[in-house]
Length: 231
Image (tube, rainbow, N blue to C red):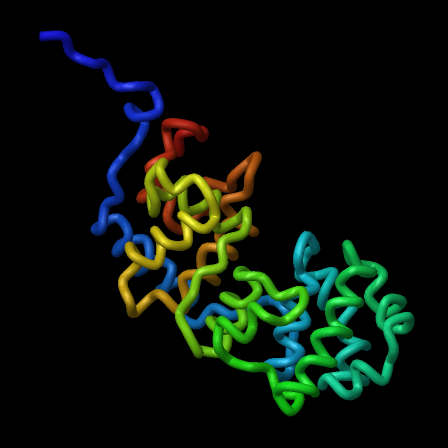
């Protein structure tokens, strides 16, 4: 009987190991028990605005722009009073600032007209706001302890695959998010996003991961395969 050889892609696919996940997140928790977003905010409105502004921009750049902005406009009414032109000037140092300013202004109008100026704290309503996509909604709901969620950016995507938290079939951000939500035990779900993004931002970077100082280097499936072996 003729047998079919596994394709290279199938041969590389490994099963997700629950014990590995447990050890990884125990290590993350020991290192940083209460991780938080690096975006500065003072209330749900400023959090939502900051996260929306952070698309394709660093948190450092957003914080620099929003420090003077939120000092004078930390609610929809005051933000609208600034006017779109002034808002654009105040956030002109971040990417896509024109379109982001337009979305923030329209978001403020909707919040005042439909939600008494408050940010609606449920996913469907958040997704209806201009400039708020699934990733932004996930960050807001998770940060405010409304709903455990894992927003998958390039850092989370990269780290999830490198550490074996997801298998090769999770080849889109949405699939990675679904796989992580299923695989990570509940006690760690509301902090997992922060641990993964911080690990990818500062240690497990794209081109030259800092394996020599990595807190989970002895657990990493990639050590000795793609990266320089540790001595």
